[in-house]
Image (cartoon, rainbow, N blue to C red; front, side, top):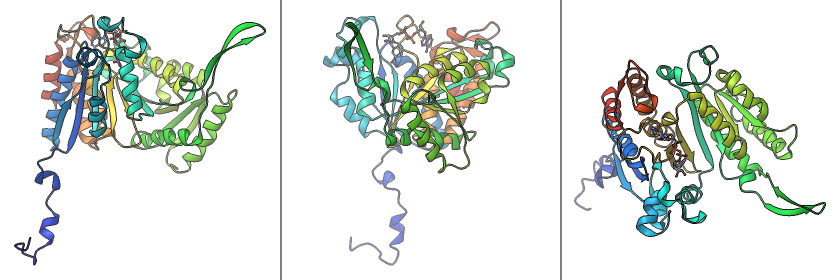
Length: 378
Ligand code: NAD
């Protein structure tokens, strides 16, 4: 405007555009889903709000339908509107989907099809699953104390959109008998991008990366190994080692403390991440993240919608709360807030438990009380 005092033009540059338009720093889409989904997501939102106050950022929420609730409302598990909202968001927080009510839907219209659909639509190629033992919950682990050592914190990075689950497959005949085949194929760019995610993570953690393959047998594993080796030159500070998948399965229960970050293919990661999650001993505690090439991601607990306890107010919200911590660390660049939430969870666990992780001598609390306690500890 001609009214502006042009002798001080630089002042204008310092006005934050988000303040002018009254915009939040981060836009999060909530996909509460089915079963215990809304109970646990509500607690996680409470904790995120508390963290935003403490660490001075603002969050704006929008909700969208996914899974059974979307089938009820629109006839399909993944409405177009949900995809559009998630694509426009900085991050997505998902509760869980599914339940007996929708078990008779045809395969491509089941709630779980919505889950696969949203992962595909957002291009989520990297799945991060931490296997963590919280000190107060050590007894819940099926692994002996002396094997666990102090505490345990492994991050499994699984390639999510390639490999044998997406390769060509078919039926044929061998020697006149029915037979079937599947193909494991990886391209160099596919391996490069998952390797970079893993190296970047290792840089933020203890700078140790184990690449897991079956290079003694599979050609696709040999390409995987060559590519990871080449990318490692970009990360001279990270100590890289290789392990065959069968050995890794064994080492995870023999000496889990040797691992920091593990990177592996879709099928090996599927199996190893389930094995590693059992080390923690409690399904209600485990978070996960799925990342795309842009920084946005989808964050969710690894458990399902627990229809057996839905509506009772006793679900454990900690896996979802810890998913928010991952979101803050990996998508929103708020590592201090992430650390604070994780520390608050560990502190609260010393004396308070939801029924799934209850131990004598601790207070048995509801889903909502657990959320409140984490907020207080924050
Ligand atoms: P589940 O993880 O929902 O439940 C397994 C057991 O763990 C149940 O006894 C449940 O009560 C308990 N549990 C799970 N989460 C809990 C929590 N936060 N607090 C306390 N207890 C908890 O697995 P399921 O029973 O095999 O599947 C139930 C439904 O969830 C199915 O429709 C399934 O398809 C779906 N599912 C969805 C996802 C997802 O949304 N990502 C993942 C797995 C299963």
